Length: 251
Image (cartoon, rainbow, N blue to C red; front, side):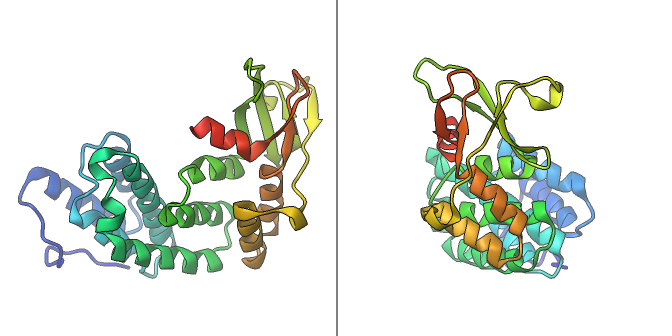
């Protein structure tokens, strides 16, 4: 368990925000305070009331990620990756990744270590998301992994006229598309999905599929094949790339 003390080598500004940040990180590091993590997400990521560029943030999240507590490490990696991707897109923080390159490299190494030993399906998916976010090559990993974890995507038909919203279901309920939320009605017309052939997967799809298999998550690999495959719009019957519309909805 990483221990946080006022003797941390990272200097702290003597102000209320620094005190609040330090207190939240100390509580989160115990591994038993879910409210502290919720508050960190709110104040660092959602409303920016605490400064993501404060030297204590990535330093402490790195210490947590390199510790022995799996849940704390996973939480630290998930938050750190999300903060870096968000920072990439803001003028005032877009150099955050470069400023803290040593910490980012350590976080990425920790994410890859935990990825290989994590048995829980959803925890594993969030670690894949953290790996992608820490690498920083794409900015839509959260949207991609959200669908894998929740087992559904709500997408727009790519028809130029904006045909309809399409629910893409991938998981225990099956693998199909529908024009309505399938969970709200039993009388919905569905259309089977077309998974990508694992042998023809390229780029990110190929990489994630192979990682999931190598890490013993065959079910995640199967779902990823559908996420990188095609769906049918129930309205116009157009066939489209699921991940392509995930990217389009992010943009």
